[in-house]
Image (cartoon, rainbow, N blue to C red; front, side, top):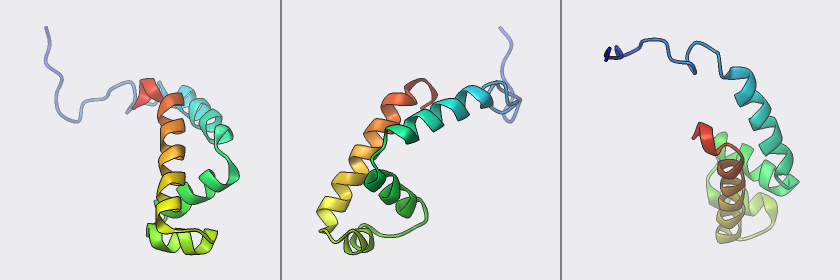
Length: 82
């Protein structure tokens, strides 16, 4: 069996899965509530949970739970890619 070199093209790196992955991501994002999508975008932008909670008008814990639910939904839809 041939060894795979580090940095060698894989289906993901070569773009073979890109259209499938983009479709799955779009589908996963549609499953999120507006609040979950917003909190996910804020977290990806670097905002801390405390700040997200303040903006949402909730506690840091509620923001954390919202982000957790969004992450779980994304993982469920993107299962084969994560």
